[in-house]
View 1: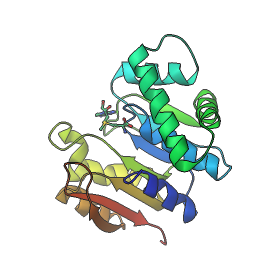
View 2: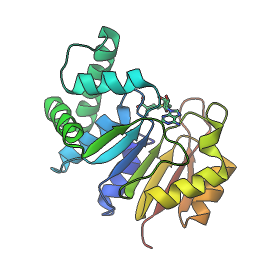
View 3: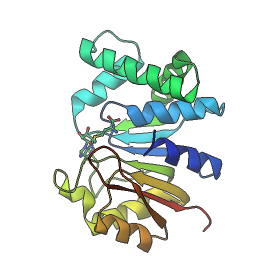
View 4: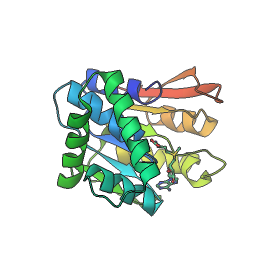
Length: 201
Ligand SMILES: C[S@@+](CC[C@H](N)C(=O)[O-])C[C@H]1O[C@@H](n2cnc3c(N)ncnc32)[C@H](O)[C@@H]1O
């Protein structure tokens, strides 16, 4: 809510394109949150998620489609994330799940596999939730070169990017792509986090 909810809400409030990029899917917190915020505003959700671990993609899609091939621990966790998010945003949990399921089934929200420097995108995004572990565990995703190219390919002229991370390479890449960069208080063990926007270009 603090790192990604504020970014999704600001992008919507500022009239940035509705498409949200989630890097990476993990347990789907960002996807569920983006859908809840869109549902509250009475609009459909759209975006793309990336996830390198096949099981995380398959279980989430199976849970959304209400199939029974989801391990119990995962189903319980997805249910809990959905309930808590819907409560916080004050929307109906069933509506959120149905809306995201519909978006995934129709391709309005795509769940894609590994993101690499070669990944291409069909359209830019108004909000980027960059939740890609850290420069220690996934160093390729945090180099200044990768981040510059990534932002050139993904960020629409009106765009908000938020991440719990706060590295020098990230701040330099954001500034060189025309973002205003704010350092916010961090979350859990992190001292600082990054909130950047390129709203009026
Ligand atoms: C911090 S977790 C994301 C948590 C997630 N936002 C959630 O709601 O649970 C980072 C995720 O990025 C995935 N990941 C790491 N490198 C990746 C890559 N190159 N492409 C796609 N996914 C990647 C990991 O498998 C992991 O699930």
